Image (cartoon, rainbow, N blue to C red; front, side, top):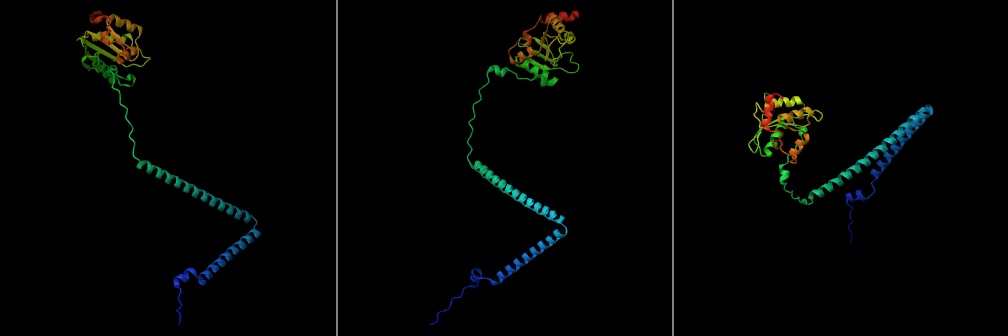
Length: 264
């Protein structure tokens, strides 16, 4: 009885067996490469022998190639490390986004007291002249005045703010937004005193400034019954620690009218 011979598939023979053709081609390629390298070495040696200076050129080229390869390897390593760091950061960000957000408890805001509600926080130096007049009118309304309005402008004849006090007196206010070193002089008071009582029929005449008054100006104001409110008094009026201008009249409206009529 003859036992049939099992043939090894061609694919398996090619995979596991000895391939003479591939081996021959490999050795041929290796021989060609060695021949080319040998020829290059011989040519380089002959050039160096004929011209020794070429040795330094070739050496410099070799060193430059080595440095270039080393730099490329370092850059490649740095790029790999940066990519790994970015991947790690992306994973951490994804974990943070996927984690449920924990709400932060909101602390209750205390209700303002009556004193705080009545206080106006105003930076008078940062206001425009029109804004300063509006702020003074706001103070009058806050403290119970009615019909408070800004009338300043061309042809105002010295009146910037008009109001009526809670007890019915007519208040005429002139506003001077001066720098700290620019004090209000007696001429300013005289111009205001010539119109506040006779023209605007003020019961209370007030000149408010963001600086201070000269001594002659204060003296004239006392004679005419004009209330002078300097920076300190204005801030006290604003925060509620000082008197309202119509509660601090000097000599009353009648004295002011008499002084103005006499031309003091």
